[in-house]
Image (cartoon, rainbow, N blue to C red; front, top):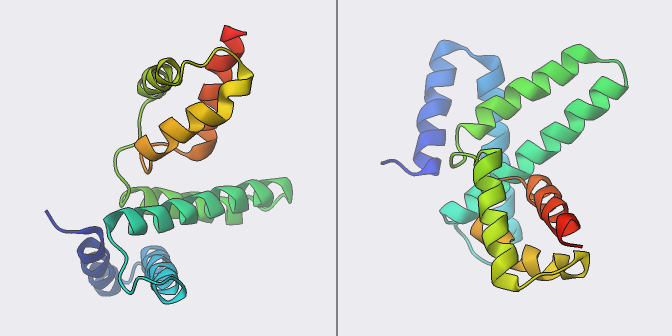
Length: 152
């Protein structure tokens, strides 16, 4: 199975051949963000989890931008951002369904011995690394808050 970096390179070539501007600019942006992270950090080459973290950040930035464009009444720009999100998510591991997320959070709540909202940090410390790349941080946080809210 090819690495994410290999898939990006192959998809970049395909996008160039197909003259697919959206895919081309999106992949170039990902590669640029990865390169920036490599130059910025101490490690010279990012591993797969590092690349996944960069892509996850890119998805979040585009979600935020799409929301801002919608608020500013610029639907065509928001749609462009949303199409880029779809392209980016193809490079991420499969996202958990809401039911799977709830199950994983319930396990972490039990593991932490959480009994109230005061235990939010302890639960997040357990669950966040476990679900890295499989669910967005906001979705994880919302589910943890929901389950802790039911406890007391």
